[in-house]
Image (cartoon, rainbow, N blue to C red; front, side):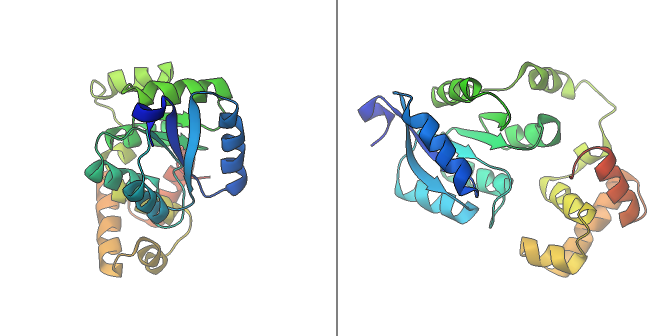
Length: 216
């Protein structure tokens, strides 16, 4: 069943924290036009559930086991390009929002926003609209007019992911294992990151990542 048949917005909540999922489900249960039709706690589960059932909106967390939020979003957009995905994250907009919107997300919202804004965002994206804050809209409007982009904005999505793991203190071998890549591939990504950001070593990358608030 989906919105066309019931008049309700059927939501898939994708988050690896059960208490958070339960809290959202409880909040939505008091809203007549919203229904939680499914839950997932990792990227593989998200894809599996969407292949088996129809949903009107996916609420997607960034950090989950298995494929992360960005990888999951990209695969969703390949298989279901018209399915609205609203990213609901603990990370501020300035870290990841633009990257997720470029990948096809219909909106980006942080978890510290009031419930009424989340409800509004779900209704907007389920109707085919985009939901972004005024501050993010301003950033998007001027993004391509600003020649002085931050160095990390030139990285590919995979390079950006590797940068975060390097800054988190992971070795090349650990990164390779976590991303299911070869050590040589990770080393190549690292070389490209250093070249693009005009840096010489991991220490400089780590300092930059913390300075820009790209990692906790």
